[in-house]
Image 1 (spheres, rainbow, N blue to C red):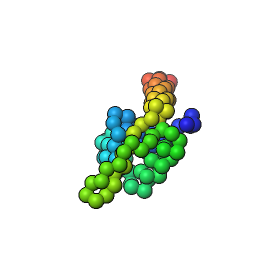
Image 2 (cartoon, rainbow, N blue to C red):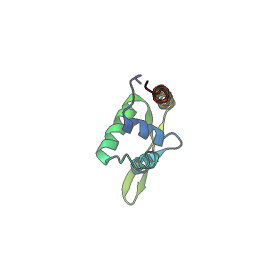
Image 3 (cartoon, helix red, strand yellow):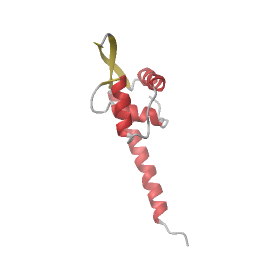
Length: 108
């Protein structure tokens, strides 16, 4: 995994998988909920992000189930993915603290 900042979709997908494995449409719903409806991932975007995160070792397929004649693949966060997510949360918190400090200073 690289130390570069995560894209917002990648960050939210990792966050959606932080508490339990989910299938693609479950991830889409969780991302929408986590973002307060602000981020609505399209299926193509989601699977591009999932493929990249699998290739980077941040998530991995956990299992597949057949539901209504279609295969649902469930993904789970790996240990490396949890570390990446925690590092990104720390980076965002540090940025927010720095900006809050600037906002607290009143211009002369």
